[in-house]
Image 1 (spheres, rainbow, N blue to C red):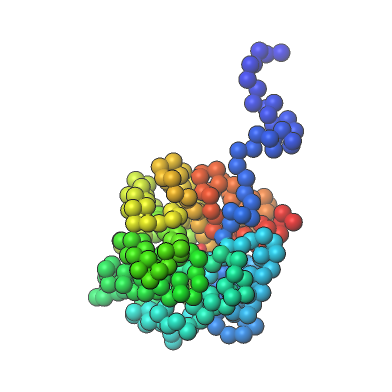
Image 2: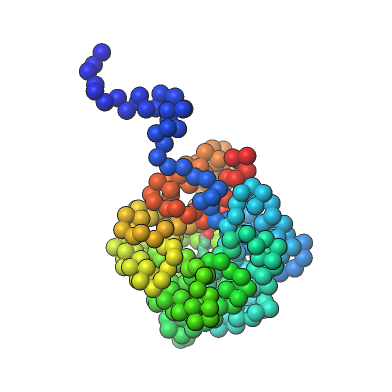
Length: 325
Ligand code: PBG
């Protein structure tokens, strides 16, 4: 025998020992399930680029939440898909207290007070320009947008949101929203900031789901350049100082280095958004039997935990929970 004092394979020799030395794991407690909401009753339409993911009317969304909670999923991020007729330049519908979104949040919290509901703050689902901010003369205006975002956040908080998720990437929005929430007495409402949100091609299927693609240009004047990582630290410094409770990196898979860097440098919990295009790629390859979709799903979720995420937003949440039953 060769003299080898260290044989790392000893710690891999059977599954019991492998479990003893396992450094990371994923459980349903780590997951937030994004759900798409539409108008109507008993309506369910599949997002064609996201097999297994549906836009649901309020009644069916409530049923879906109930069934997920039975599987142990307790956190949900709701996104509204609105009729084009309700969209305008100022995202007016986002400020309608009786609108589909706030009334659904109210209903969810009434039926399932123990569910944690995260809401989305950005103008794109309501904007006729399909941008996250207010557009004037072809430019996305920062400070004018903040006012709309803060009002939107207040309406969501009043409706019962537990976590506000600003996904817009305007400068200063976390502080602006925090102050508005605190002034209105919502000191307990959390902010999960989309801290390092990149201008990514992986959002395509999500924009199909909400029909929210930009009507002109792209989002590169507000979302980050995929070439940059130090800039993520700058964004994280600002969000931490402005009062964020969670720092999110989005997308997740091509940005595991950014997750790792934020987790090494900040004490706040890190969230990873395993986005629509990442889900679509795995579903497409699995449908062709080119990969084992279930195993790849578990492996990529684990990679996000290993990189340092404590929270994962993923369209795989329900099927992950079902597979562990
Ligand atoms: C927009 C928003 C996007 C996503 C969440 N919020 C898309 C975008 O910035 O165009 C993407 C989520 C996904 O791809 O799963 N505010």
